[in-house]
Picture (cartoon, rainbow, N blue to C red):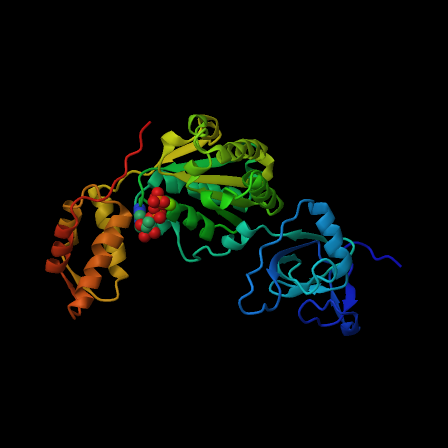
Length: 376
Ligand SMILES: Nc1ncnc2c1ncn2[C@@H]1O[C@H](COP(=O)(O)OP(=O)(O)OP(=O)(O)O)[C@@H](O)[C@H]1O
Ligand SMILES: [Mg+2]
């Protein structure tokens, strides 16, 4: 007897994905899973001294989906549960990352996907950053709010959807912070990738990783792909002779940016502090380019005030005058080199508050903020 798609199937209250037939008991009803995303975890243990296991690689996603579905048919899945391989690598564990519906059963209609290692990183987005926490950069935040609106209702925008946004500017000016704020405010999946994750060890790895990243993002749309340190993978062709491995990555990235069409529901955010190093073909595919400049005096004051409120001990210093004498400092400089250092100084000297004196002393010890220059 065949059951219609999505029809509830009777299964037992399962533990650890219950791949064993013996645990099948009648009683509870679960809907059929449309899609299940698993990540490779490895064996439950290894002998001390044995090397750690490497991750799995899937070359043919359809084949994997069929193989996985056949052996786990009838298993109940929900995020967090483990499923064990029975044939190729017996007892190798997979963990359910996502299931649609959240608690469902694997049937003939289920598509099973192996999450790329990049997606595991995507889960680590700080959850409480809001766009409000980014001081200044008003036009960028405005655009980000539009992206949030788009992600909430992609159909509203049609062919006029925002597709790719590029952030550039000196280090420590809030590019990553802004992207994380969008990620944590959005009710959408975010795929975070650092250039170093995307360049593989073997030839062809980089291209494959880019393709997998975008493929996953399209499957999970509406979603955001955030590529930090874009310069390392979107390197201009003139530099690719130095980094031969990068050219295949650039080619893949170009292809994927083109495939991210209006209907895909995927927004790409790229960040770099070396715009000049980026391949012009890649740069052109970003429809909005935003410069993150160093903060103005008012913005420096705003940043100092915001982080002062979060300090574990009170600060009794005239923040206005500190803002006035810190021209050229980035937000990161103000937080990490001025406030954090002052806090550490105060704690080391056993003081219960941060005085103006301490801050001035710290400032005097900082000659000029590091500011790498990029030019070609
Ligand atoms: N405009 C800002 N508002 C609030 N905090 C800021 C701002 N700019 C920088 N910061 C602080 O500095 C930290 C570092 O900023 P961030 O990592 O976003 O810099 P970035 O522009 O991505 O730098 P890089 O180019 O080095 O990657 C942030 O986590 C935040 O604490
Ligand atoms: Mg950054």
